[in-house]
Length: 447
Image (cartoon, rainbow, N blue to C red; front, side, top):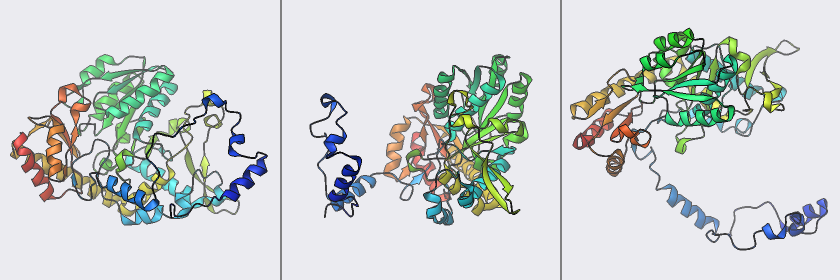
């Protein structure tokens, strides 16, 4: 058999065509001019039987360097973290994985409550008043924070740290172009935002100062000092943060951040070639009505029972798009659920324990690499990532590491000309002492 099961029969097709009043598929498309219709054969491989196709796809998938067979030290925004088994079980339930937007609360209480719990836990982690029900990813959340800031301050310039993830900066610039917002980069110095340069760039034209914590190079930014410079000029203080790191670090809300954004990927979401993810967006109460996306609120029904509903939804998001604070109307509900289940299963203590394991194992890796003669760049405080410098291009080193079933760190030369031989190493709670020692041994020859 060519196919396992195709529900559409030729008779079904004839009946559908008859119902809409046409005799053939060709007649269905007769409004399309003949000259633009494609007549030849598509330049693709001939069709295969299902069994042959599955075999070919399995062979192709087998070429991927997955983290089941390989030890990964690759991070840069997407990490190899522990995921509780219960998470897969819950998100596989049909009422969750087939659900989209819970417009009808009377039949969507399960999903609405799950999203409400996600909002609550993100707000607690970030130290903010309100969090939305998720966004596409961390980069989208970051760009939306700039748009909100520009709208709130009526200013058209944002300052973004040079130590922010390059992909987040790229998304920001794409958004900003459409809104005629100027994006100015604050230079980084020794792997952190240069505070002197920030001070010199501040003016009453600045809508927001945007930093990452921990930043792209793994370092901990001085949020207290950045906040003073930002608010002294009545600009918005935006912080992009790895939510897992907040199990160990002081949350941005405690430093006076106006908006905290990030990606919930560390909580239960697989690496999967970089997506799909789940962005979060948390704000102070003052900005609650400007939040993009959706908010779920808690209420009581007419019988006094607790219930959950979509709330504070601006109609402009859906119909008057030119007046909307944001044109994002969707959310990553299933991914937000995965993160909610993961955070719930781990609990407060579990999140703190894993965060501290990341800190400790990264510190151990740094120590072992230095003992092997490898140069660690910018030796300040870091979370689970840090930068090393090698005597060969990182792309070449990573090819050699793959021969030992080690997925090496991120090649910083891809984004920064001055860092052509520098590698961003990520060490999560998944890495063992033996794996870290092996990495140090393998990199000794490139010191």
